[in-house]
Image (cartoon, rainbow, N blue to C red; front, side):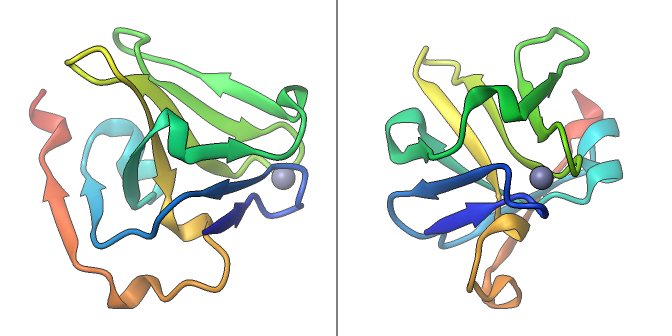
Length: 113
Ligand SMILES: [Zn+2]
């Protein structure tokens, strides 16, 4: 799957395809409106320079919310799973040529954490 920010300064590919997406109601996700697909770090390939991205962290600062420094679009987040494995949460809204509306949505009560 190919993904990108709005201006194209951030481009990436992900091995595989999502079968569901997660909608989270935490203070960050609710504002961003992202729908997430969780993959392992190995499935994710960034094709543009790291310095095109900026990071935002909050709360325990364990999740790096990464966004394009030019257009501001949040295309993915990076974090560590409880088992210690590196993972990436892809914003499925940033995938190219992909029908988001056909994807089942799982609602996650992130606000309760
Ligand atoms: Zn951009």
